[in-house]
Image (tube, rainbow, N blue to C red; front, side, top):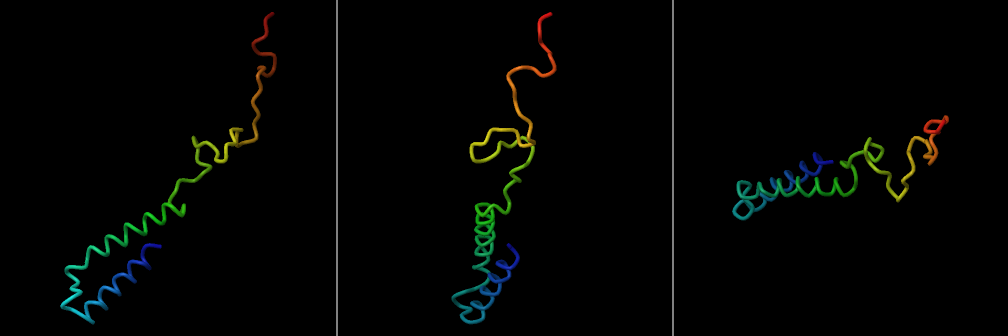
Length: 86
């Protein structure tokens, strides 16, 4: 996603440099490229394209669901008679 916007930004800067070189000098306008890169990265983050996978190990499920993801169920009593006296 960053490369198309970077090419468009470069094209606009070069066009402005050709139309009005005294006003839009490329040597002074290069920080615009860094600003566009930063804005694209922020938009990618908020759109979720660079967020870690939700099903990644160690992550809690979203939406308040605290059940195990693999279908296992929790029980209060130990399975198989473990922990019984006698």
